[in-house]
Image (cartoon, rainbow, N blue to C red; front, side, top):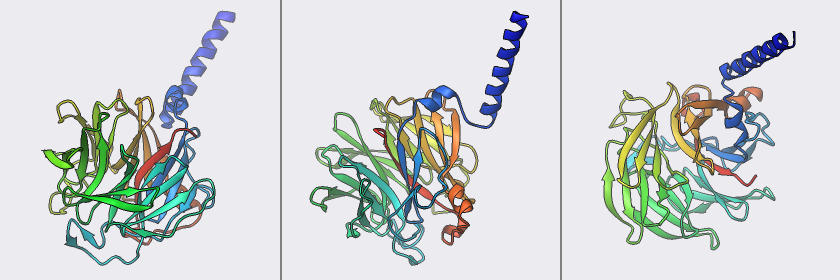
Amino acid sequence: MKKGFVVLIAVLAIAVAGYFLALGTGSVEAMEKLNGIAYISGHGGHLAILNLATMKSPTDVEKDRIVITEAGSEMEGVIAGMNFEKAKKAGGSHGAALLPDEKLAVGLLDGDVVVYDLKTGKKTKPMKVGEKFCGANVGPDGNVYFEDMANGDVYAWDPKEMKPVDKIPVGKAVCGIAWTHDDKKAYVSDMVQGVVYILDWKTKKTIKVIKNVGTFIHQLKMTPDGKQVWVAAANEFDPGLKPPTHPSQLIVISTATDKIIKRITLPKERFAHDMAFSPDGKTVLVTARTYGNDSVVMVMDTKTDKIEKTVSVCYSCHGANGIKVSIDKGSPLLCGIVVDWKK
């Protein structure tokens, strides 16, 4: 009887585990190792807040988001020097960098920068820096580097003096930057060209261009061990902004050879935009647009490339509060992600 009872309990345990895996909750081990607060920028002008310990989708407009500015769209105004429909509104958040003093330096789609204090909830007035920002990343020198989609420049911004201190011409519509651990090289993604520039960080000059990364790419991130750079190749468009014919992928580049070593194809309607690696490098959080009524965060195992969980970030809150998106053809589009792992 005891043996039969033990077997029955084991079978039930396996069944319950299988049920939760089928729901997409992922393994307990994968979920338990994540602990931090993710801040996810979006065209709506606010940042969604996601507690990685619970992975509960944001629903509360007061507690689960940070309002920075009004809405805006990256496909309005100027991109790579090309004029599109004139921007209807001035803002739209697109990327944020976490500063040491618990503040966020947020880059906007009109080239402004706003600093938000996570402790007090106060924010600065918009500061004009560039033209149309995509990524925001803290560099080796402590400055925040903003990548500009309008003119292809990378702006260095001093968070202490709150002013730009350098401008680096790179491409046409740059979106992300990452540095090797020895600070000798920097990798910069160009959205419309689908290439990654490699810069000698001492001279700030391009020393190599990795071509055919994608047809329309976004931000990139360095792995914690410094051995790889991952690029979000959403491929929403073919060259010339034509209808897409290529799947959304994550592109893995070796920093030793500066060559593409892997292409990870993502599920349909999961257009990757940015990533954040866990401190141990075993998990990567991928922000993705669906171009439907939602944008999501995918939790991926970097060893198996398996998506352990997908979390709604936009519709979970919009739907609960009866909010309808009026820009971007009614689709809520998120962008960059930054994580405070100390939390």
